[in-house]
Length: 333
Ligand SMILES: [Zn+2]
Ligand SMILES: [Zn+2]
Image (cartoon, rainbow, N blue to C red):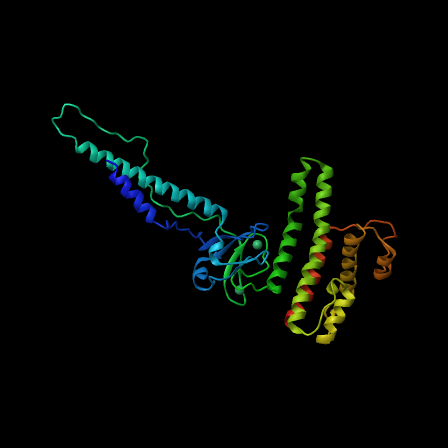
């Protein structure tokens, strides 16, 4: 009665591959996950592009730029669900073989024998058919690489194209500014939520969000300038953090384009840009406490040495507008 089971087990032994399909989401995107254990960033790629544009040898993580072969990017959930499907499938095949074996045994009993034996296999599950692993919810931020045209989607922000590894300063800058704008927009909601726990914590959390946003604006602008400058003048070396400084950054552009921030912004705008950059400098180096250097560089009469600067949501939005104006001008040069 065990012939069928033995045959099925032998068959299973020969089966090297149980293939479990993976479903794309409604927008046609597949879930992927960075295999770098420190990162594990989840993103999506357009299914057709994954087939046609992506290379087997190399796929890049949009967040950390880790490189790995194309078969290394299954998500933790996909692997778990595929294992589960494969296990159930094997279980189903064994159950079916046992059941059929029992049926064969029972049907072979001589009709008129004195002792009758029958075998019943209980607890079996119906034959399991492999189901595709469902996709996660669609991601809103969809990006198309300007170099290789591959389409991918992320939550939050991305720095590199997963298909060609291209670091797009343009897209990264736009994404970063959008992220900061979203953060500022959501501050009232965050404040309300944390206030239910503690008013002090709500105040501290929101102040910290506004202050870090100012720093993020400067970093986004700095990264854009570094990448864009290097593209235009690959032979020139840029001093560390040069574009965090309005005066130095402006000189760099003047060297290669013959124009600088003073050509692209009004005097008032340039004064405000400098002031906000200097405030960011204080937050990064003196925990926001005003020093003489700040007063010398900004002529800001609203503070004395030893005071702490105040940053509001509108300051961040203003800085976003100013760096955006500079970047938009640079894009046309
Ligand atoms: Zn990664
Ligand atoms: Zn690309």
